[in-house]
Image (tube, rainbow, N blue to C red; front, side):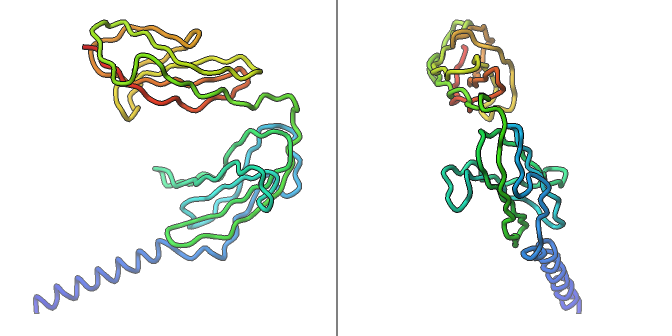
Length: 230
């Protein structure tokens, strides 16, 4: 009898767990994502465009896509992003893009563990500042110290290369971390003429450079190099 009770209890747990898994992924394939902005036919009079849509119950992520001029005849596919649930259990329903003047089409769909909605698409026009500087600086390329360098001198001289983009004034920021995952920032500063010098205590450090311009554009991070001070 005891064994039978244990088996019945185990079966009940399995059935409950299976039902719970099913309930966690309701079918949302026939649901509609309500778009707030930009709506179909909107003319955006600035180069910064805020994309917003309504929360869909039971959605655990959203897929956002952006094309120019449209998805059927895309000259550029500018974005394909998945916005996922955060540590607080919330899913973002907005994203911001800086765009040149012209015609665009965007779409969004909701997803959960087992289902997804159709894409919901809107076309819009950007008619902002024709002279707006939207070109990001080129990504810096690290030169020295070479990756994996070990030295006794605590003074380290850094250098990198980057071809300037015509337009807004550009600057380079250098970042130092004490871990390879780049989670512990130990210092940062602005370089001058693509060089920088600083003294370090003993240990291994990781560094990278990112470029910014006066118009608010920024480059991608450079590759990451390490160096060790004995």
